[in-house]
Image (tube, rainbow, N blue to C red; front, side):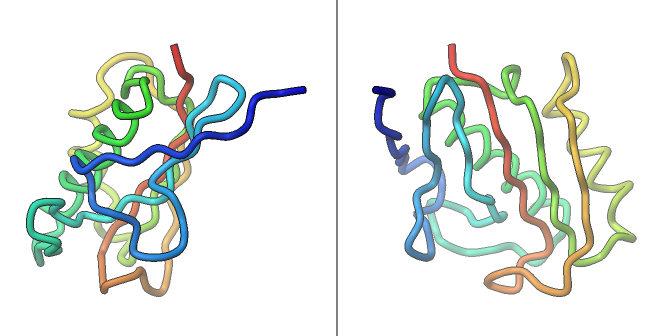
Length: 128
């Protein structure tokens, strides 16, 4: 019998805004829910795209680390943008977070995101 999935919760990232967990660990992996650029201290989403993107990636890092992993162990990244014209700007920011071997990644344009966010990032990472 395999171990049960375990939920991950950290105050260093925004609380879930619906009936889901920040992340779930199972089978040596951590599966993150999408992270918006919400400031966990204030609950606000900044208007500036680059600030949102950095905060979303900071939130990813906080949840991954709370699960016992790190950005260096991220295997795959999914990026959701409401404006694909911001793809290059996002890439420049993203490159400062993933400096070693790069994870696999998809980036897609979406019509809208919760709380009128401009970017959302979700990842799957390996545990130690």
